[in-house]
Structure formats: structure tokens, C-alpha cells
Image 1: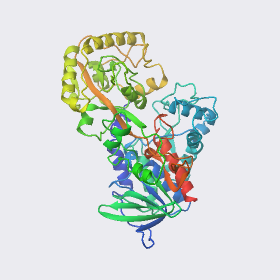
Image 2 (image 1 turned 135 degrees about the vertical axis):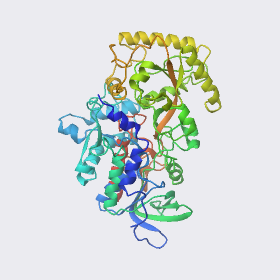
Image 3 (image 1 turned 30 degrees about the horizontal axis):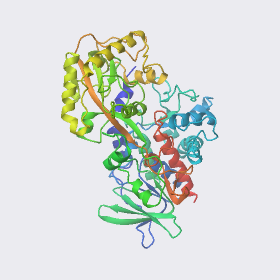
Image 4 (image 1 turned 30 degrees about the vertical axis):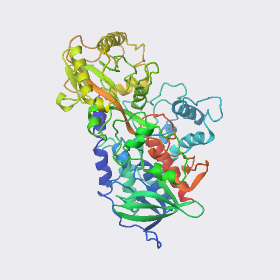
Length: 577
């Protein structure tokens, strides 16, 4: 197996942004903006705020409905975090599944989505599966309109060759909870643009192609334009916005509706400290500062769950240097590798998906009034770094990973971990290794070695489910030129640690791809007011709202799928207003 996809994922930090910029000819300008009425600087039918998958799909859809469209983006380049992503979208019952005769029934699909996304509320005997009416209808809308959104983009020719293809590992990619009994279609729901995602254009092909379509249709796109406030008429309907372009204040009229797709708030430290359990760093672009939350609050919006987020572990040393990290520790590579907490104990299946695995950091120990997993320590040996070097966060050359710790013995390595923690304790709530860390960690390693030889992880089930095995093959493909043999043990996600060093460690902390909390929308992507009724003329989609799928990252593309679906819903509904 080649490492093509691994290399592509490692390039997401920059390639996607370049692709998006290229599609719009570099920085967008104000050329072509519609003539405005007196008192307004610009006038349009549908104003789309942001330029990622959510706002881009809303703009494309509203335009196809015959509406005049204007897009504004506060950053100097287009695409938002979508342009930094893999450009893939997770969609129920899409056209390829239908063509293959695979039945992705609505009843089963909703049970999977609610069981995974709302496990505390899930009640299979309830007509709304345990959710309140509105949240159930929002999940239902994702099923009802996701495949239609994809078909619409194809029919419009937004995607080159009018096509998406299945995103594959070696075969159609498994969902992140493929093992849940409610999941009747555990593989094949993830799509990617047929052109771009797997080529030299990088991961931002979806955003790039949306922008290219808008540009070709003459849609004005204003960059460096930050919306600051909604404008309502006497009836309470949103009719436009106030915005800033540098020091200049402008007003934009939107006769049919305003659609926000402005991203989450990962780079707003105050909001993260208030609503998130912990965010040390984020893959989101710097523009993800939660602008829509105070704007919506000022307009009387109902807040949904503000504490949601799309999570990934991050290399702590990198995150402490810069909050905006290049790449998260998505799928942890290696087979002779484990994660332990400050007490030297494993606390999670290291091969689970990044969103679920990261939540293991947040467990609270009520007996000791602490979060024992606040930081985790990735332990591995020479085999793993040699066999899988280049799969982040493993370096090919050790000098490429400045936060890599090395010791000839476990005791030497553990001493270096604690010394590193001592230098960071003012920024990590004082986390240090427990006095019995070394003894516990060596016992943990011995226990893991036994699991690896037998092929069964009796504690966390590592390698038991399809997701673990398939994504391990992708992100732990053996490096070309390695001297390490293939894993001969029964479960290829586990290999015993070497009896002798050197041994290695990297300190991991919780981070985000972006947050996913904000105002509550309904099934028409309308933002709800405090009374539960829609605020007329106001729509939102993407990471700036309370995630339609709750806490569940349903599979690869689990953020972009809902974003483009609710962007499609918003654009269509607003244009028909």
C-alpha cells in the first residue's frame, strides 16, 4: 500500500488554502457589487457571510434559484477551514449508494445519527428517538436533503465533470461508529470531489470549485469585510447587515435573507474558556473567532449547545507555541504505541477516531477532584518510529519533530517527560507525572505486550472493529525503506514493545478541528429566536451553529456533509422568501 493519502493529509495545512485562492484569482475584490439604494452601500437578495462549504453552497443554491447573491468574507483569502480540510463530505443515501443498490433507509439512518450524536437522550421507542421535536426535525433534514444537495451541485456543474466519488481507504471508508448496531450501512457514505482532493490541488478542492463557480457567474465576493451587526425592519425581519472594511463602516441590504456560515470559535480564547472543556490548539483558520454568537445573541437568537466541538488531539509543544496548528494528531500511527495518563495507565483505545478519542481527556475523577487524563503521553519504540515515520506526529527524521522525547531506557524517558512538563506547568494547570507513574507505566506496557501477542485488547478493544483496522492501514502504512518487518501478530494494530530502547514519547493535549456550538436552527436552517420561532430572514449553517448531528462525528467528512446540506437548505429557502 502506498502512502499517497497520508502525504495528502499532511499537506492540508497549506495546500487547500492555496487551491481556494487560486480558484478565485487570488484575493477577491469588490468589483461587480450591485447598485445600492440610498442608505445602503450594497444591495442583494441573499447575503452569504463566510466562504466555506456552508456559505459557498448557500450562495450557489440561492443563485440557481434566481436570486441575486453577494458573499462577504472577513479574511483576505477565501475558503475558511473548509479550504484547509480534506474536502470530503459525509452524506446519507447519496447517489453512489443508490446506484449500487445499497439501501440506506431513513429509519435506520436516523437511529444511527441520534444514537451516536445524542447518546444520553436516545430512546429507540420514542417517535422522535428521545429528542425534542425541533432537534429531531433538524437531524431528519440532514437525511432528507443531504443527497439532494450533492445532486444539486452535480447538476449545476459546480464540481468538475459534475462528479463526486467515494472517499476510500483501500475500500469505501468505514464510519467512525461502524460497530453500532443501529448503523446498517457502516461503509461508503463519504464522498469527495472527483477532481482535486486526490491530486496536486490539495484538500481544498470543494471550496475552490464553489468559488470558481460563483466567480464564473459574476457573483461579487468582498474579502476583508467583517459583519458586525444585523439590521432589522420594524417587523423584526432581518433585512441586512452592518460591516467593517478596515476602518470603513458599510451597510449591505439583503431583501430575502442573510445566511451565516462563518465557522466556530476555536480562536476565541474567552469563549473557549467559558464553554469548552479544553482547547490547547486548533486546526481551524484564525478567522474562527465566533463572530456569529454575539451577533445572533444581539438579534435575540436561542443558543443551542455551545460546548460542542469537532475534536482532535494536538502535539502540546506545538500548540503552546501557536494556537493555530498545522495538523492535529488525527489517526495515531504505530503498532508498538500506547497512550497513558499522568498515572501511567491506558485510558482509551488509541486507534479510535480523533473526535471520540479526544474526549477521553475530559473525564473527571470525583474521588480526587481532578482530570487525570488532562494530558496524555504517547509512548512508542524504535520499531514504530522507523516503520511508520512520516505519519504525523511521527517524523521521518527525528530532528523534524522538535517535541519528540527520547530515552535509552524507560526510566530515562519518563524523567524527560516530567522535565518537559515542569517547563510547561504554568500553562497546563500544573500537570506533572504521578510518583508511581514509572511503575504503573512499565506494568501497563507489559500488559499491552500480552494483548499484542494474543491479538486481543481486553481493556479497550483496540483493533476489534473495522474502523480501527482500516484507518490503521491508511495511517500506519510501512515507510518505504524501513528495516522493520510486517507485524506478525494476530491483530495488526498492536505489536509488543521492544525489550531494549531507545524509547520515545510525545505529549498530547485536547484540541479542535473547530468548535461546533452556537445558535439553534430549525429544519429550514432558520435561526430560532428565544421564543422558539424563526427569526425572519436569518439563516445559518456549518460550525457557527449548534451541530445538527450533536456530538457525533459520523465519519470522514462529518463536518462538511452537514455544512453543505444546511447551506443548501438555507440558500433554497432564503431565495424563495
